[in-house]
Structure formats: C-alpha cells, structure tokens
Length: 378
Image (tube, rainbow, N blue to C red; front, side, top):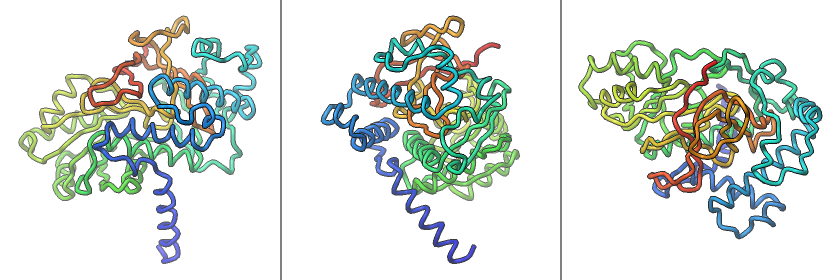
C-alpha cells in the first residue's frame, strides 16, 4: 500500500472511530449494551427537534423508551410510504391509514412482512439511490430462501458499533484481550470474520482470524496470540471443543468467554464446551436481514439482550397473527427503527421465542430481552 493510500485509510479509520458511541462506554458502568442503547437514544432525542420537544429532560425509564419506540415506529412508517415501493403497494392494498397508529395496540392492524416477499423482490424494499449502497449481503438463513440486503456506510458503522458494545458486554475490556474469530464453515457473500475483525480494530480490541478446521492449528493460534475470547458457529465450537479436550487440560489456555453464533446451541452442547474451556459460553442471535448482530446473552445467560434503539419487537401467534403478551411463546416479529436503506416493518423471523420484560441480574433494567430461540417447524 502506498503512503497516500495509508494516509487515506488512517483518516477514514479515525473518522469512523469518532462516530462510534460504543468507544465511550465503560464496561464497569452497568451493562455496556444497555448503556450504548441509551446513548444512541439520547443522541437521537438531542438531534431531533420533535423528539427533543417531547422527550427533552425526561428520564429514560422503561415507559419513556416504549413511547420513544412508538414515535420511531410512526416515523419509519411515514418514511417507507414515501420511499419503499413494496410498502407503498402493501399498505395501499390493505387500506392502511398511518395517521390512525397511535398506540402499540394499533400495530396489529398492519400487515406482516413475509420472508418470501423479501426473497422474491428485494429491490422493491430499497429506499435510497443505488449510489448510496456500500455493501450488499446475501443469506438463505434457516429458511433456504435467498434474501439480499443492502446497507449504507452509516448503517455498516451502526452494525460495528453494536458489535463492539456486545463484545464489551461479554467481558472484553482489556488491551490484553484477544478475540479468536473462528468461522471456517460459513459460506456467504458476507464474511463474519472480517466484520468482527474490523469491529475489533475500531473498538480498540485485538483479534485474530483462524479459519482452520484442524483443532491443533486452532490451539496453536491461541497459544501464539494469547487468545482470551473465542467466537464462531455453535456447531464448529462444539466439535472443536470435543477434539480439544484430548489435546489439553480443562481451562489450560485461560479462555475468559466463548460466544456461539449463527446456529442454535443446546444446553448439552453448552455444558460440554464450558467444561472443556473452564469458562462461560454465551449465545448470540442475529439475521442478515436485520443487520447481522442483533442480540446476545450476558454472563447470566438468562435471555438475549437486544440492540434496544434499533428494533421494536413483537411476539405473535404464527397461525392467527395475534400479538402475544410478554412471557408467552410465539413467532418473533421485528421492525427496524433506524434503517434507511432497506427498512423492514413487522418482519416475520420464523423464530419462536418470548419477550422477557423484567430486569436482568446483570443490572440491565431498561432494555428488552428475548428467551431461547427455537426454529419454527415448517
């Protein structure tokens, strides 16, 4: 790389770092993911005249955050009606008048967004000119329907911001910590290893990508780099742990935390992984359609903490579409509150869960959590 290219890259990195609220969050000041969410909401209120008039000086308790999300929901509804061919057609055909949406009970009137629609006509969801798109990701997820999603530069930075906050919540808070990124079995148009590596660089963390299927090579990389955290698919980390227990003593390498993503993790799998490495294993949940990294467990392993400012979540009866109260299991439905490139309104995830609407033992009391994720039987 030439000197000029190095200077341009350095400038871009410094500009990106200044935009990341996660860098200002201290791990010992409550749950970092919740603190990041509150910072995003406060900044949004500060920079929006209508929000500032309504919420300025208001303490951000749970009721205020619910009201803030309802405001953002109405705002994104107006945005897609102005910019999204898909939602313009969907709501026109359903005779929807968004001026009538004044409470959470009104959400049920809106049609659900089906995964098949996103798979069949992705660019009907697009709300910005093509020139504003920086990256497009394609994923089939668990439904085997190929779905393409586009993101702007600012949206990619938002993803990185949330990833850094999630890593801090998982315990990464030292310059001596090293995240070993292990995704040898993922084939997609987006590389989770590169996304995580970039997040670590911008967040001030150390990381190493090791995509070998060989357990001995993975352990060699750990020893050479002083790995303290691991992240990878649930199935790979489980198989790797089964092989590793014959190559080392339990807890020998000083791993502090393991994060399993992309696939379900059973309690039996978690127990085996934790016994091998002598540390806790956290589950992470996300969908390409929603921005890759959407929720993660804290050390108490009692539900997934959501990226609170980014999503409004509902749980519905998958057969009737009726919204279910907190604690009842049903299909998770998500609205992206801050996306401008390809927003999704009441998007059906095909995942079964329930909303946990009470404080967590980690100290988080304002964000929402969701319970264990189950895949919907087709």
